[in-house]
Length: 324
Ligand SMILES: Nc1ncnc2c1ncn2[C@@H]1O[C@H](COP(=O)(O)OP(=O)(O)O)[C@@H](O)[C@H]1O
Ligand SMILES: [Mg+2]
Image 1 (tube, rainbow, N blue to C red):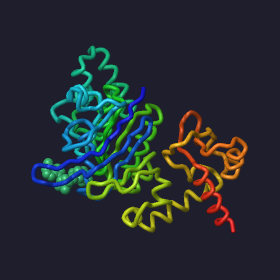
Image 2: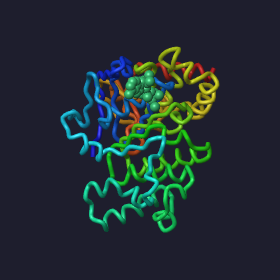
Image 3: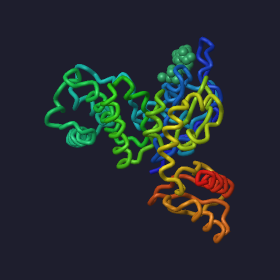
Image 4: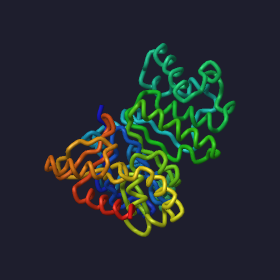
């Protein structure tokens, strides 16, 4: 099922005059985890809240699969979208099982169906149902509670999941575990995930795509590789930081010669599919032989990105530079 969210020239001015969002246009794609990142107060939460109509825009539109969300019933919309926030938001007087089955109950699932679902969801986030289903939130650690938060967001099987700094209140070890867990879950479930964070290491680790914001505007959209290797401006560069840039570039040097580190997420010409493990030289050969202007880089069925002839020539030159 396709669930593409398209934000079109979104503006938000709050009643007190604060301009929180200033002309943001961005696409969130299916089977991609997109991180929205930027300094505190840059509008990340405000942007996210527009996606499930917790905020109304001053102007602009948001489409899900080409249909404006503002022509849809907002309660019904919200039930189709999972939402995880930093402050977990479990109901303390309800058991873990009751917390997870809130939306399935609102959707009037049969009791047997949602009880089974609770067990599945707990297993998905690695919490033994027999032990945890009947406990109360305060009988769990912070990391475990946040797992329940994720289980609850996934319970009604939404295609879209919004997460607002879900792991930032956790200790580093729980945070790392949950990041890895989320990546595993995403590999299996292939949702459209929009994940807000202010932590660049977190974004570089888990994101398929990063949307970097400052003062209500988008500064750059790209894959982690693109952001680190081709920062659009000085702000992006300083937000990444020199130390992190060098560290990341070192790790991506390991697969010099493969196409992975060069691709971009969008092009406007037809493209020839190529496996991600091709070297840059092999790709050039193919482009010449097939007389195509661009290639589509695939890993199995998944499209990782695209390369145009210009970009690939740039890659070739830079790689030669590396070798000498
Ligand atoms: N309800 C509100 N009324 C007025 N200003 C707000 C409101 N909510 C957020 N803001 C302001 O909008 C800007 C963006 O806030 P927010 O989206 O929460 O940023 P972030 O999540 O990136 O830290 C900030 O300047 C914040 O103070
Ligand atoms: Mg926020």
